[in-house]
Every structure is written in structure tokens, then in C-alpha cells.
Image 1 (cartoon, helix red, strand yellow):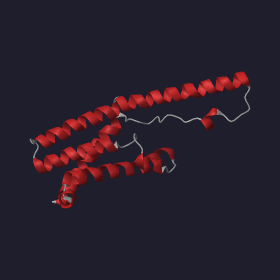
Image 2: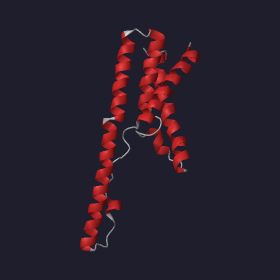
Image 3: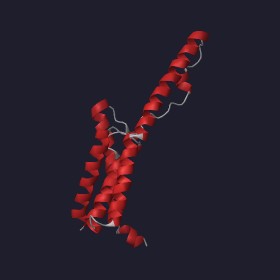
Length: 160
């Protein structure tokens, strides 16, 4: 069983694609913020989409090895479409809602401090903020899709 797992090209290709995509987020965000933030290596959201890279490399590697007309390729493709739709739709909207909720909590806390003239720690130091970057912009998913496809093709030439 372990030998079969070790020779599972689609599995390893997908794991390599998601790992590389997640690691690429660190230098990408450095170019934008000029700060090294290694939290991006395991965070959701950002450029490129690691989830998209994984599912597109999975579908591509299955297509390359099992055939483009195989049921496994069809399953992986539909799975990938659902993941990409979720990343740009539901998860992105949830992140936008988190931004609004965080701002409402901050505004409400400021209002309370002004009303009560509180001299204690600001609530921003004592409360937990919601994670605002959950999903992806379409360009991040598009880039992740191309990245995953390229990883699968390169791995195919290395593996076989």
C-alpha cells in the first residue's frame, strides 16, 4: 500500500502544487507590503490560490495519465470547478462580511469609549478580529489554475 501511495503521480503533483503555491504567497506579498510575513505560507486567500493550484494540477495529472476522457478526469474537473467557484464566491463574500463586521465592532467600541470616557485598554487590544482574507479575487484563482496546470505538466516530464 505504501509503495502504491509513493507512486501516485496525481497525489504528489497536487501536494507539490499546493505547497509551492502557498510558499509563493510569501514573496508575492513581500513585493506588495515590503514586509516578510511567513503566515501567508499556510493562510487561505491571496495570490496565487493554493486550493486552485492543487485541484487543477490534480485534474491535469489525471488527464495526462488516465486520459482526458476518463471518469477520474471528469470527477477531478468538476471538483476543481466547485473549489474555484467557492473560492471566488462564498469564501470571498465571507471575507468581505468579516471586514464589515470588524469595522462595525471597532466603530461601536469607539462610540462606547467616547460615551463612557473609558481609560482602559482599547477593545482592539482585547478582542479577536475575524479573518478577512478567506477567498480569492478571480485573478488569484486564474493564476492558481495556470500554476497548477504548469506544475502538473512539468512533473509529468520529470516523473515519466
